[in-house]
Length: 180
Image (spheres, rainbow, N blue to C red):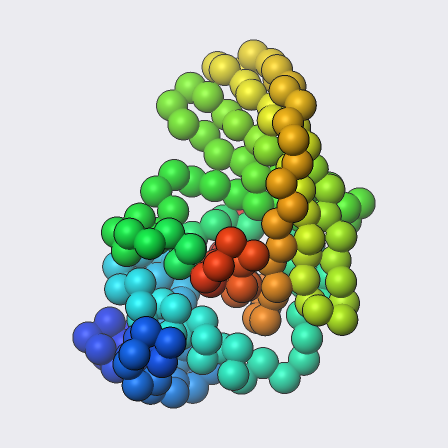
């Protein structure tokens, strides 16, 4: 299959890392990314290359309506340790229709949610956001809310469909999200 050949090196690392880029079709790149999101067994440089391949095939800018909803954050190349690029805890990003953004995760009996607002720029296909509070729940109790200093962040989306989204992160690197 194309996914197994990609895992075996059919898609090379991005040129920015000093390797030749092997162009896959959009369907091959998406299939590889779906496998990466599901099994988390595709090497990090191959995931990044598949994401950048999808960017090459993108014809229309991502629209706000395409990112509204709940997304599982799967992979981020902003992390320099390749073994940690697959996000080690389950995290969800929720972009609401009303402009609220949440980053939710569970660790043991704790549930955490960073909450803030986002603005979508159609010209840049980008969501600029900042979390200004943290909500904590323990064993169903809470939430306890802590105000925090917002740190502006931005995802510049270059691919989004009903299954996956890919974005450049303002923290550097690429982020892969899978719709929940």
